[in-house]
Image 1 (cartoon, helix red, strand yellow):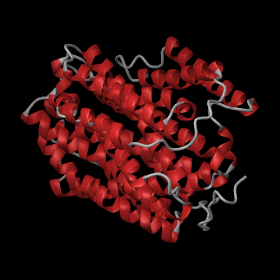
Image 2 (tube, one colour):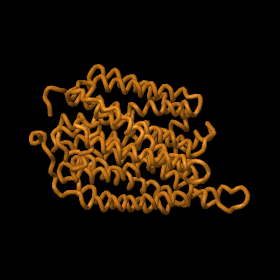
Image 3 (cartoon, helix red, strand yellow):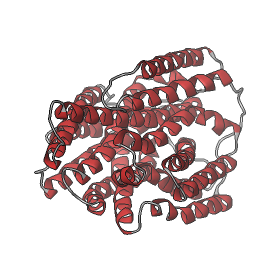
Image 4 (cartoon, one colour):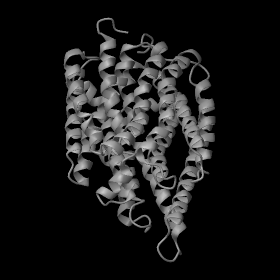
Length: 477
């Protein structure tokens, strides 16, 4: 660790900002059902409040490595948190759904760039053998903030209304900016590499178009995949292929995908993607189901999810310490087994499930996520030499929102199409019971898809190296 900088003050600044930025990723989840009525929009439309947040993050993450090398830590962080604050104010004052959506997208700018800034600082300031502990502490922010955000938003929505989800963040946003101005120091060097605008264009079209295309599949009333959406997806995938090919040819790539040449990095990223899909999708589907067929209020749902969120937050630092001691494999394999069991339970969920079982299964889900997410990501980054730190972090942080957005969209699409198929051929207006059965049918199909992903995660975990080897900065060229 560099003794010339105050690492504690720097991490404190980053973690305070990241907590409130990431808190907003899931703060709207509980309110989605209410917002459908307020703004007169359907489920596929309202889920854009979650998807657009992740879409903006996905588009910005590839250029985070470039921005980190072009601007000082202080200027970049204060700038992005200012944009976050502006977005929060816009959302709090939203008069219609589009205005609320714009506010959410501005918030996403701050969240998108604050995460790679933090993780890059960890890689630069701390030795590999202690990164597990530091990343475990940061894991409290990465996983605990969005989890507890669901609980807090349920209480706030029921008592004060949805606008207060943003109003309460405003003073903290101001505090974060002032705190950073006083305590934040610069980490790393400003090298200002050449900007390849074609790479930026290809990544924006590829990532943004892919997320938009898949997010649009479930919209409408079951007409299926339209020609326009299919064209968007094909063009986007082609753009991603061209983007990757161009990065391999450039001397100074926008996003150095050569990080995937390290096998454990690739395996860690596969696990990271799968767990991101499961986490983001569940934090959308479970509150919707709990407020639908289960009949709970937003506040009650938030309280039911709280034990799982607390368990996740409490165990994250401990898991980081265990990672430093035993390595990733001994944590990830048991974690994937528990994940398979939890998802199998959700694939059989019904309105008759007891409160105790609902809480217990969610706790198992959050425990499995804690045991897999940070160990897989930290182990993956530990395999890289220092010159790939910023790029490895950017790749990981690009994959998370992209996979989360795709996961939410696909899960919502499966749920929506499942409900449509269940209701086909039924005469008259469906009763409340029939609609609940239709949603249950849809969510079962969504979690069977999740089950397949979890089995893949378990198989991948078996190939994680048994060694705790990392590339030390002193050994890397």
